[in-house]
Image 1 (cartoon, rainbow over the protein chains, first blue to last red):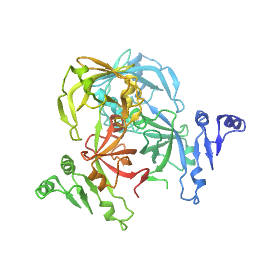
Image 2 (tube, each protein chain N blue to C red):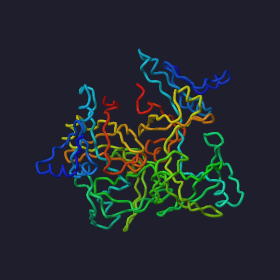
Image 3 (cartoon, each protein chain N blue to C red):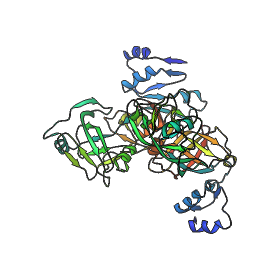
Image 4 (spheres, rainbow over the protein chains, first blue to last red):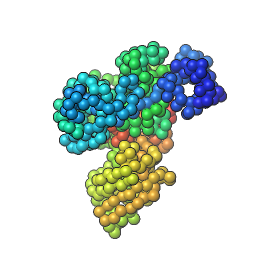
Amino acid sequence: MNLITESKLRFLLKKGIPNPFILKGEDKLTPAAIDFLRDRHITIKDHRLADSSLSTETTPTIFMVPVGVSNRHVHLAPEDVDILFGKDYSLTPLRELSQPGQFAAKEQVSLLGPKGIIQNVRILGPSRGETQVEISKTDGFQLGVYPPVRLSGSLEGTPGLTLIGPKGCISLHQGVIVAKRHIHMSDEDAKVYKLKQGDSLLIQTSGERPTIFMDVVVRVNPNYQIDFHVDLDEANSAGLKTGDLVKIVGKNGEFFT
Amino acid sequence: MNLITESKLRFLLKKGIPNPFILKGEDKLTPAAIDFLRDRHITIKDHRLADSSLSTETTPTIFMVPVGVSNRHVHLAPEDVDILFGKDYSLTPLRELSQPGQFAAKEQVSLLGPKGIIQNVRILGPSRGETQVEISKTDGFQLGVYPPVRLSGSLEGTPGLTLIGPKGCISLHQGVIVAKRHIHMSDEDAKVYKLKQGDSLLIQTSGERPTIFMDVVVRVNPNYQIDFHVDLDEANSAGLKTGDLVKIVGKNGEFFT
């Protein structure tokens, strides 16, 4: 076994670590080494199974991808920022998100539905074209709002709810969705992985509740960091947290064989 | 196509409907027909793919199984019924559950953890040896209690919480679990499906969030009705509700081929 530790990677860093970082033969990463690569947005590509097989043609190449768990959150149109927080208000970045330029804002709102209220819901910035509220199905039962599973931006025919901020409130007629799970990647990642925008992946988790998420949509953009986005229901059902690694095990309904 | 409607099944009922009910060739069941069979605890066995193939040896036999979604609930030891509801109190059955003899009781309690309270939590009867609280991971975050994923009855080393009833309260030292997903079946079902107690199944859902649940444990008992038990996180993450049908697609880590 060739154990790759964090110290070995730190040493390698001076010469430059290849991205993706390819595991071969009997390579094994320590948990600290996985964190080290992840923190530097270096993708791990697992060629170990292919190496140990007689036929490399038909054996799987396993791609490891980090998980990003999204709690309920709100994207606001600029005019809605004005209503909720005051005229010409600017959102205050609290921390960066995995996708470049995106941030969790200091600002929060309450969501009010026919059956209940959820307080302290994070705004994500920067503000964008149309206000969009992303909740889990569990949240939906609490609020009495039953949104469909949709990709971000696909809001036609979705339900609304009431947003309450410190300076005003808004009754949305539409804009509430349960986010469809998806994977972000750059054009370069897509090329390495032989994937394209709109491909549907099979993604397998490990741990105490192992699960294969089917129909995970690929979203490609030159600025995207590779990241598998799930909501809290999906994370809890599979025992996942942000930063865990999962495997891409198939594409467009077929397992890699 | 041979459309099997509820009326056709009602007509068949006089002669007796075979259990399992086998779908062959171009058979197709209407949703009402599926409900009709399910209400009578008749298992649907899908041999259609096998029929349409040239080689019946290698094609899958797909087993359809109904889903039972478990919300948070509590099983009480007799002495704890006394403390929470009063000396020699008897639980009042509200409705039968899918497993014979089990019932949802009229009685409810509150769960109190370090971070929060959840009210109106259903008691399931009859009372049993040791008190056991089954919550989802989502509930756990609300309560500030982080139980492991366990099969029912496996309580060693699990956390506790406080139960509050109309006549008293109990601070449990252990007994809180997140239920490990499992499938109940009778000895007869197990024989038909070539399964045994402790087998681990791969179960596939359809719908807008298609998912394969891996490591679904088989529990066999002469009195069990066939039923795939998941908690609310699992149900919401896959868009499942009680009575939906799912497919057994593999066993002990291997897909049926």
